Image (cartoon, rainbow, N blue to C red):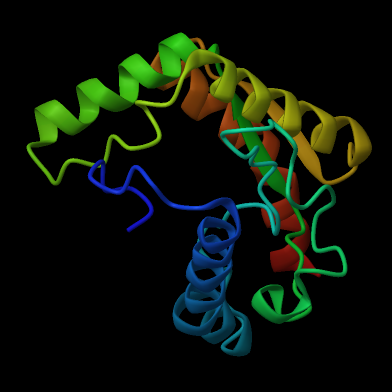
Length: 166
């Protein structure tokens, strides 16, 4: 529902709740079992996305895992969040190209949003990054796949080794 381009009329609160439901399901299926077995969990989004509403641009939830999100977050907060920062025009073009070349479902709902929407989302991530520099690492995603991959490894490796040896 969240990605399907046919769903153009999602109201802000139901949309936010769908994101929370997705997050809670990911915790139940992937992250919780990985943590319980002592394995590293798979990547997940920051506990709260800085998602603006389409009409006002106001963020619905301003802080990661604040008072409105304890249920979907289940008390969890990532040790490390990697923010792949990229000019919205480039990001949208890459996403649309990937969807086209992979021949999958039409998941272009977000890509069809106006540029100012994408700029507000990017600004929201920038604010989260500035407020949480000990946990969020900004990765410049403008480079090649290989460059971005190396930046991710460089940023994540210390956290991974600390977790494994700790």
